[in-house]
Length: 117
Image (cartoon, rainbow, N blue to C red; front, side, top):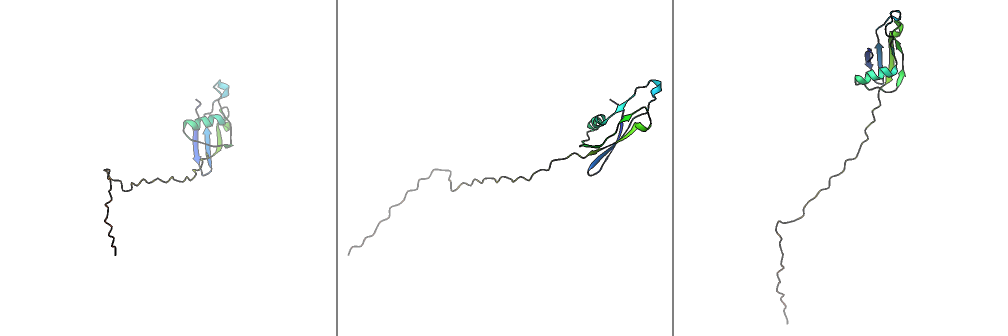
């Protein structure tokens, strides 16, 4: 992987990334390295930093000192808001006068008093 030094600064709405690479002399047949937005996003992924859409981008090249430092500005990732859900009410199961034994209730016959006159 490319050797990129990254500094990350977060605000409420943006993530600012300042990236630096080491300058190499192109005349001495050193490896020329380019760094684009995709490389920065991959490096942020390795660091487990989530970013949103890119607002400002840059390109790094190690052949000149001016192009060895670049700034990227990303939006903070959008986290979906949780919707309020109504809790389900628990059904109550109340046993009504259930005895543990089977009981047979017998009615007693009452005597009917009849007075005849």
